[in-house]
Image (cartoon, rainbow, N blue to C red; front, top):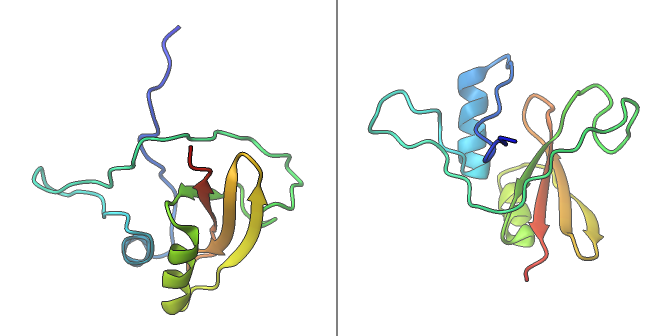
Amino acid sequence: MECVTGFGGFFFRSENPEGLASWYRDMLGINLVPTAADQTPWMAQGGPTVFAPFAADTDYFAADKAFMLNFRVEHLDKMAAQLEDAGVTVKMVGDMPGIGRFAHLTDPEGTPIELWEPVQD
């Protein structure tokens, strides 16, 4: 069976696409979508990617949103401090033994984001 080889992109509607793209660039380091051949898209580092449908009534993330973004980070405490210094509220949500540590925040349009620091082998 053929299988996908990685996560190629996430496309979603926004009230302010340019402003939101800039927020993701400035807060999380995600390059803007290239508009020319000499520009580089965001290059995710290799690692685990979880694809997990949740129950429709989950309270793990915002009840009014159909999805939550999860980004791997190397240093959760440093990333959280950087975001808080920029005025973003970050809630540390604990750790799962053998899996890693987690924090939650939202983008300017209320999209739930989870930061994940995987357990280092």
